[in-house]
Length: 74
Image 1 (spheres, rainbow, N blue to C red):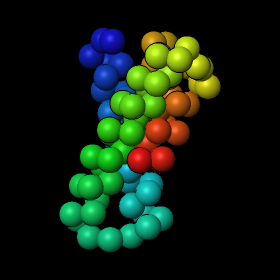
Image 2 (image 1 turned 180 degrees about the vertical axis):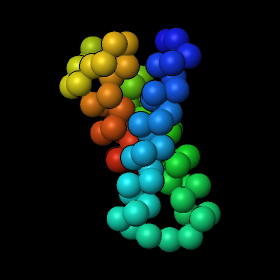
Image 3 (image 1 turned 45 degrees about the vertical axis):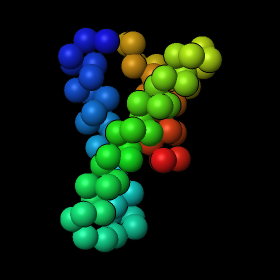
Image 4 (image 1 turned 90 degrees about the vertical axis):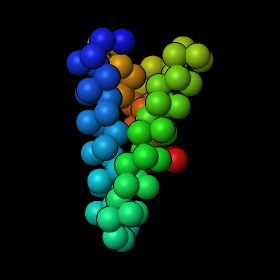
């Protein structure tokens, strides 16, 4: 993966964490927790997609669909 792909993946995962924080609420520490869990979930979703060969929504070398799914499951 290239640096721009990693930055895009980080932005998407942080957006998912922020959306969950907006829906769920909480303080600043929870926001950081949601950011961390979302980034980890996105990475795991990406890894599972590459490992199993599943594609939901692919943008270049980044599997956005499985990453977002993993983000929200974490």
